[in-house]
Image 1 (cartoon, one colour):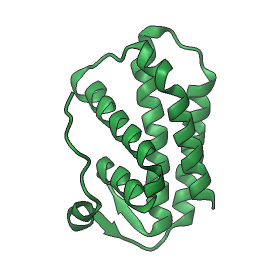
Image 2 (cartoon, helix red, strand yellow):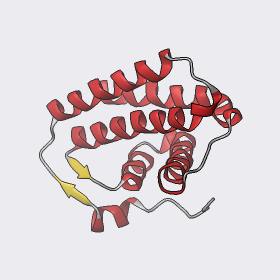
Image 3 (cartoon, rainbow, N blue to C red):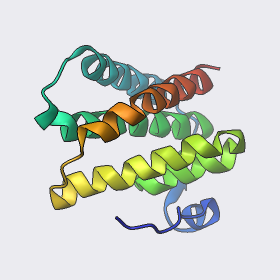
Image 4 (tube, rainbow, N blue to C red):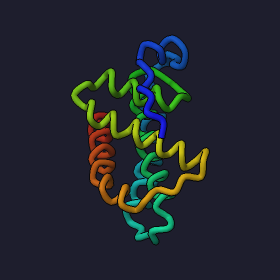
Length: 143
């Protein structure tokens, strides 16, 4: 898998980020959708052959929460990497979590664009991390 570095926030600001009016309503709608997705993936027991879909689902939850966070700060980006770069820049105390999200984004891209099948062990080893990140993002957004 590609081991490139996360794009810098400065690069994102220059090329991929739009400044917008802070939009708490849009952020709240995204949180509702993320919560619904999270509830779905947390509740369902799945056969091991579906683990790639579950990992993709957890990534979507985190991506929607990062997008909501940007809206609360008055930014918009269609670039997933810039969502992570913003989080890493704005909340340096969550550097470890940012790195996990970046790794998850790369795995999700492998799933979506190359038909990569995630080993069940990967999800089992990282499930608690993903859930921690989701709770952390939710807490930050709601503050």
